[in-house]
Image 1 (spheres, rainbow, N blue to C red):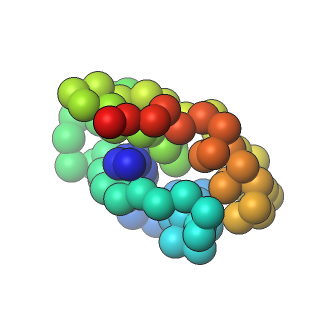
Image 2 (image 1 turned 90 degrees about the vertical axis):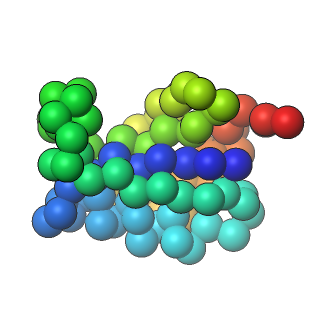
Image 3 (image 1 turned 180 degrees about the horizontal axis):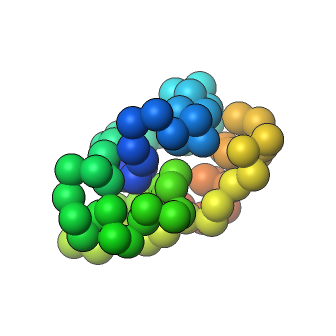
Length: 88
């Protein structure tokens, strides 16, 4: 399972979500962090939306529902279990 986190340096919401993702134990995944300031297309798409979490499915990306910054790790795990598409 591959996840992509669109973020940028100094974004406290991004750092909070990353910290929670690092604590997830119920769902196994590989995480790629993409800094939107390194590519114009990412910046244009996500400058007002970060953090954005997507699941990579073959050659496309599926955006996952946005969680409240106050959501705890258990809520994040529930969202992942409910919304991740099984691949393989």
